[in-house]
Image (cartoon, rainbow, N blue to C red; front, side, top):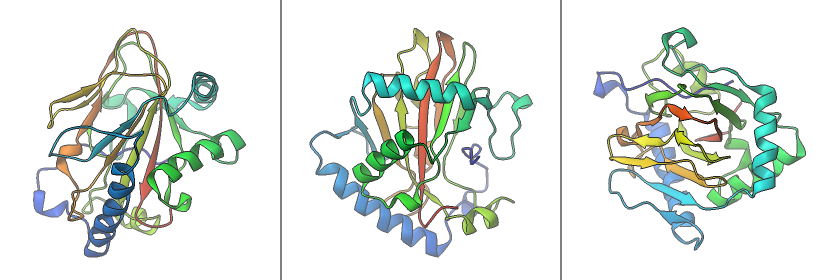
Length: 234
């Protein structure tokens, strides 16, 4: 399982992508940006700090219900790089879904087609379940290149370029996705797909993509997330 990375470290100069990945992030960012901005069903969230897009009703009710059942089968205590469950940093339950499942492959293909990215660059879809009180504190999805895990991740596909996250159900209270640097909070909306570029236009990792899954207060929250790398993943 490839979880999201931990929150920002203090040494800003050490968190830039290596030159090869920076160029790749800039190239991939431009390709996806052009495709999404030309798609009439895609809404661009108005902010100059990051590239964030949304698609309403990307999944229908039956697809959401099917994914919820899948998530319930694979969910285990979540992990994050360098942070274990006991530290209460990421307290949800999550798990990678079966990439060989024809239903999962169909949805992955739709996400890849929407972004115009090769399916081979996409990580396995991860499902996440949040019960009351559970959360994922502020973090970025891109990797710290000075961290111990980076040499392995560089070989496994390099930096994460784009993130695609779909909400599977409505939540009675809480569970919003917050981008605190931007001042943006997005409540769960069944079937909606949220997409963001983890880099800036020049290919440098974007601090403004810092985001959090806020605590669920009442109800249960289900989402699926698919991360894309700059090169073939795996």
